[in-house]
Image 1 (cartoon, rainbow, N blue to C red):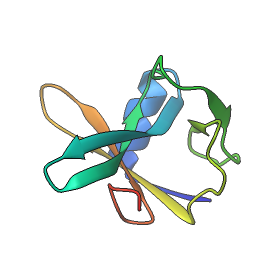
Image 2: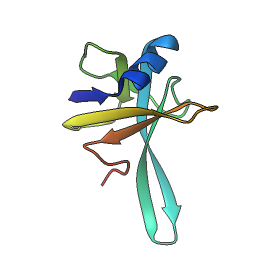
Image 3: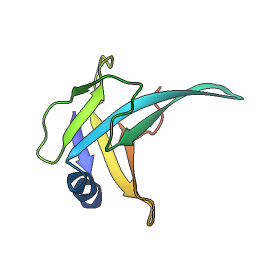
Image 4: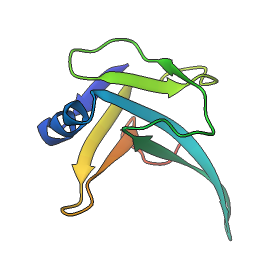
Length: 96
């Protein structure tokens, strides 16, 4: 898996311990179920994580149950007052 990260996102993660956790979250809507990609510098308490293959930027953790890793994981930093990391799997925020 190739990590594609903005310099701002890498700096933010490093300033907060250097670890990023990425997981999927299933939601229901009027058009059916969707699976959205979530990311945080703290692990989500409802998930088990395993280390992703090493990269030279940050420590990355993915769901324990995830069978196949995406080709690319993109991370970006958003927000001015309340900073947050957004993640995109192969360019998408939703997982098919």
